[in-house]
Length: 254
Image (cartoon, rainbow, N blue to C red):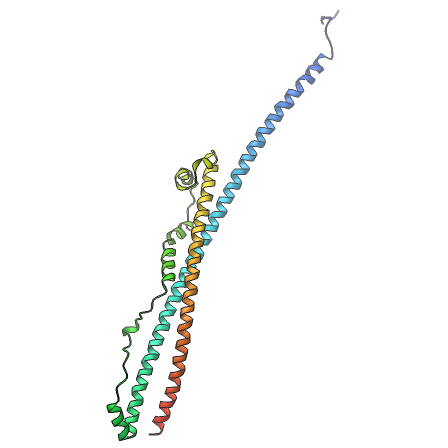
């Protein structure tokens, strides 16, 4: 006879297997849940890192725009200096032309010479030496340029070809750089560093946009002032041209 006990059930092993399978399924579900949680954590870190890099690139472009704005402002100021020197030259030519007209009148007749002798001489405007100019940009543009020039070092640091990324240093400075409350950030060190870096970049972008606005307003004011200078210079040149033609006609009549 078989050594199996009378209470042996040949289906007992299958029943035991069926009884164990829910636990094994439950164990597999916990493993899937942990795996999914790790995936979500990695995805959050990846997206945070991508957002931080995006704000860093935007900040770099903002610094570059600011640098271009400063260069345009400096060029506009040089243009204003050139216009000022041109206006002074036209004034000097007008003064010399008046002197020439007085001499021509003296040559034409004795009476004209006597009139010029007793006639008060027009005031002479001395031209500036060595082409120097007392032209100054408007105060708004000067202040905006000074404020933007102070950020030139940040442009050097943030430029993609010049800056050196050091995420570890961001982690070490994460708690001290941001002005936001520490409790508002995640407890994860890497995620907290990314969030604080994003906030810092956004704060600096806000300041940079404010500087760009002031720079644009200063440029607009400077352009308006130079437009007035151009109109004034155009009228002076037209008057000078008429006087030159009149003087040339008098010289030909001698």
